[in-house]
Amino acid sequence: MPTTYPKSQHVLVLNSGSSSLKFAIIDANNGHEIISGLAERLGGEAPSIKYKYNGAKTTIDLKANQAHEEAINTLVTLIKTHKLDEHLIAVGHRVVHGGENFIKSILIDEDVISGITQAATLAPLHGHANLLGISSAKTSFKGLPQIAVFDTAFHQTMDEVAYLYALPYKLYTDFGVRRYGFHGTSHCYVAEQAAQLLNQPLEQSNFISAHLGNGCSVCAIKNGKSVDTSMGLTPLAGLIMGMRSGDIDPGLFNFLTTQLNYSAQQIDDLLNQESGLLGISGLSNDCRTIEEASLNGNQRATLALDMFCYRLSKQIAAYMVPLQRLDAVIFTGGIGENSDLIRKKVISQLAFLGIDCDEQANLNARLGQQGIISSEKARIKAIVMPTNEEWVIANDAANIVKEL
Ligand code: ADP
Image (cartoon, rainbow, N blue to C red; front, side):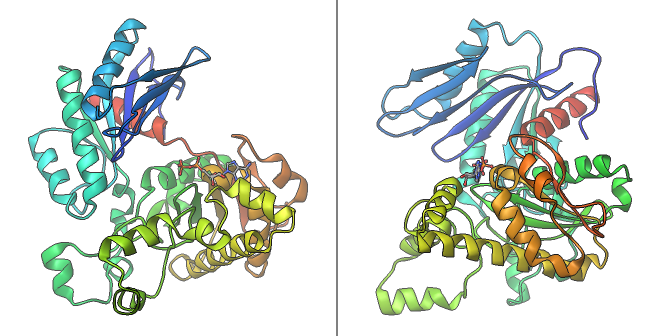
């Protein structure tokens, strides 16, 4: 839970992807965003940095093929030019995969780097990008503590019954093949906020949180701890997402290779970039576009939405098994926070659990507004809770720095 601090404690939050780098300077006191931006197409023909500062949006073009290191160097110049380094106390890195090595955020040293490197074998693309971000930031921000915050850490409380795959056990013991789960920072944050909203201790709260952005996952939270989640070894598993298929029959792999001559890379691209809402609708991975097309009578868009909601509802209902008792379903992420249509569909499919949707409250909850959208009489509440992963990262970093 974000704690309050006596004076400005600014943290540079870095989220390094394979060809992108999201950044923001956040005041750990209050989550206030001082500057934020995105470097994209890194390593490509026309990389650039777009950023927002003092209400103005600016774009800086980088040279062709310039990548993370140059983007971070440009960021350093930007920070110095605007004198934003004065209150900077740390750099917080979003690290996608921590494997089983990390159960909470940690100060980065050589051991941590080797732990992240080891975990990177499970998610090479993300892992490599995270390591690049860390090494560039270490060079550019000498003297500032670097903190790693893991997407997987919150889910390390899962029991082996929930995290193991029914594969030869050796694949787990020798290679770490298991369910890890992602979006942990978001699930953890919205659960804390929901407990506050309901005025009950997190340690006695049972929630199912649905993080619905471009990637989507559901998490079963029992007494404040993650006990199951829909993403797996990688963020491809579980729900239907913008471009990702979510769960499929693994037998598909054999069909695609033997009957259609697909390579492993082509299958990976198919499942990660050509499937989900995009694959079904043939239109877009953007939920707004799909909703609009569906309203205009596009049947494949309607089918995509129906499938998205059906799979999500089914996953939420399944988590009644580990939870047994449920206080609230939490909706978050771009879709969860804004799509009254999807919330309404999902809640109506779960009505048998004793959850309902107050029409007006549901319509009102959008654009960063939190709130309970179920009626007074609902046994299980429905909550819209905006996520704020950057603030959690800044806050974790500030807490660790305080102990140094
Ligand atoms: P990311 O996972 O990249 O952080 P976001 O959490 O911002 O993504 O979520 C992006 C998704 O949210 C997109 O599918 C977008 O269409 C959807 N979204 C944003 N606003 C709305 C809205 N008003 N109605 C429906 N979907 C929305």
